[in-house]
Length: 160
Image (cartoon, rainbow, N blue to C red; front, top):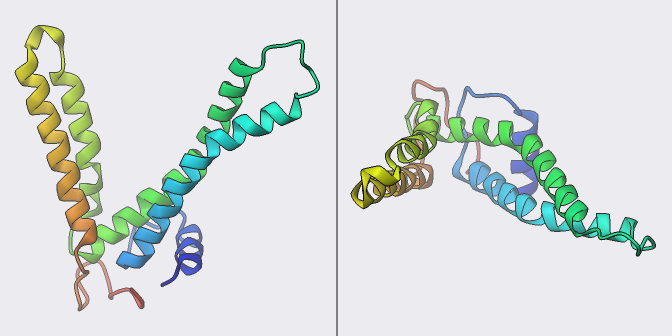
């Protein structure tokens, strides 16, 4: 599956959490997410600055910052649901429940709970290690080849 096929498939399956996704489908779409979210805010700031360039009497830096953030949030809102859906399907391809997708965010919550100044540095270190460990496990699962045969989540993806 190439980049265009991956993006098309993920957007057509915008909120489809069932089934399976190939590695190429997942990683091309994950790459698109990273690219779009890295570019959205600076493009939004630039667009704002260009649109008000003739109004030199006002300081536009704060407004441009906010406008850039709005563009980023808009892009994130469009991409978050299909990204979660393709992540679920990718985990299904390796025979795992899509609910494992929530392991790293759960670890973030745990770190937030553990990281309190009165608890000391050891809780911070342990919390960060749990977070990094959960991210490493998730990336490992997403990189694994899918099951060659049908599994409880369906037939293998056609390409990838």
